[in-house]
Length: 166
Image (cartoon, rainbow, N blue to C red):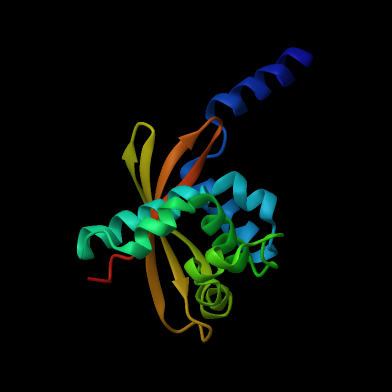
């Protein structure tokens, strides 16, 4: 019995949570405002970095994107807390307050509801998970594709794209 239990633990560690399970767990953490669980399944700094990279591909580097990169950990923390509906980090600097549009992130909680995973694609340590989100009425569904990277025994969201936005 002990061997089977130990083997199960090894099996879980090797396989752990799949990309879709990790997205589901991140969504649950979002809904429950669980910062610790959210951090397990979302790399907030990587997400902000990815957003900056996407923005700079369109507009090129700006003074604002350079400043956000210079304060990346603090900005990512402020945005993550706003997204979860939590108070700002202690000792948040006025500079970070200017760089992090926390009001916009806080509104997301009231504008969308997670409806589940639509598909998964990719191989190796990187994969894409397409999810569906609805508006408050539940009538309009919007896809959102999460970029995922392997992180020990689970996957982390490291970026996203909206396939309907051009």
